[in-house]
Length: 403
Image (cartoon, rainbow, N blue to C red; front, top):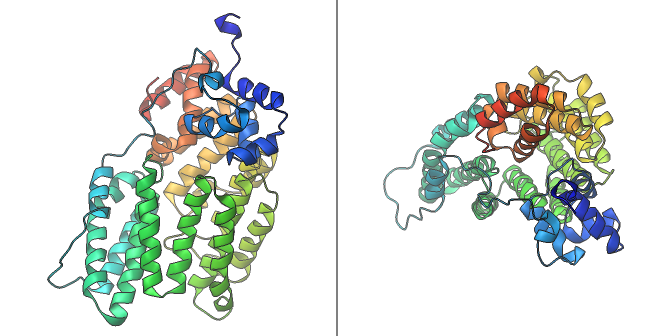
């Protein structure tokens, strides 16, 4: 067999799956991947990553990953690109202060600092760089306050400390250090439990569910999200708007988790979130940290459709959604990446490049650090028609991709 006729990694996965007598759904379950992911790997619409290959190998009876990648594929062990501020954030997370003295910052000051950091995350075009500068100081200040305050101020400080850990998780999510992400989840959960605040606990579970889903524990994530809704739902009718915001966000997270497992039940959870937002919250409501709002609900609809492998539905959902109405620069950038994924599923390479260019102009760091965006750009830079390849190479290089 010549080099030109070598099967692609996706074709190798499909041949081995068929030889093992496995359906895509069965292989996906055994490998802790979604059926849609397996489908896209096999048909070449998603690259076979080293992590996915390691998950697929045991059920396929593969002992040498070369059997999946073939002799012409070079594997990089560099992982996801790391942001320059990761080490500063790591030091803040692992600086265990045995003793603390002095006066802690007031809870009003800390709340303002936390709100400013979250506002920066959602409004800056370079959100990771700007938040990376704020996070170490915010983590230190909230850690001190949780140790030094007493009574109600301590509980309020613990809730704010949990928010600092959540922001650290959002910052770290795409930088390849899974252990550090788990640390933020565990610390955030512990702080929320000590705060004895149902909203803080629900938010901690929401963040934990995202990491559970990304590590193949989607069923566990859905169960934790269901449990979190229990204390929140009774407060929605008469309580502060934050309870309705949190309930909607829990449903949205559950919808996305189901979609990534290929479960059409995602739409029922999505509809529950939409009902809460449209029936309980004011029409112009925007959550400070979550950005829960009417436009965000529609963003999730596009994401669910893409992850369910339905580009027609994704495009239909996106048709009426003006990206400029999405109340977060970071989420706008991610929305353009989702639209690019939808175009990529249909093999529309010009549209894929156009949408990734829009994402880059909206939020360059979203393209630079987003694994799906980097995957699409890498393929476009090497496989796109000559008429757009130079533009794809330029965008890939701007995003820091070594071709």
